[in-house]
Image (cartoon, rainbow, N blue to C red; front, side):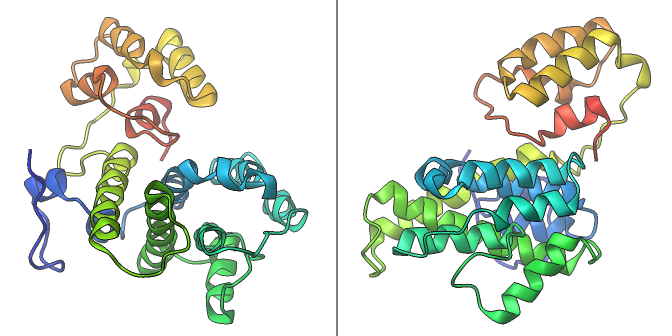
Length: 263
């Protein structure tokens, strides 16, 4: 299916728009009032995941893991912040700077190169004192924008060329489209909400879903779909998502969240 850009970003989306959108910000704008803090954080983490190995010497994996744990309520704010206070960013190189800016938007207030105003915004994000809505959209937009930019530079293999080029723009569009797919992976299709029947949540279903979520071994999702069907599940969209061999899954997958009762 060819992706279509929406001429008026402020016009309400249709289901066809949602499926075809190639920019995650278009999707975020549509559900900003209802998106949970947890899912917004996990989506931002998914956008930054391809960059982690590059900056692992600066504790990238530790910081990403801490952000996910904080999103799921597994660690306190104090422990979350402590993970960043122990590790300082390198502050050198254009790509590293872009990545740390993206990490700052995830709620990492000690990232270098972030102006005072943005420091205050990320502090609000970390503390979770703001309501979902415009603030959530702003912070996640910033995280995604800079993660996409860094991913583009990394994919092009030239982190020092500041000149915009056709190759850069093409790669940027490709990264935006991939992040739009990630957004749909995390938030699903708001035009087709699924009423999950508690009877489908058998011991086998819960065990399989929990193992996939915690281990990130999403190869077992087709087996989860079989278990759901055995339990009487007739939600075709849910079963198809779990069985789709081309679907890339991440922490926060809407199907797993639905099974596990996570918001």
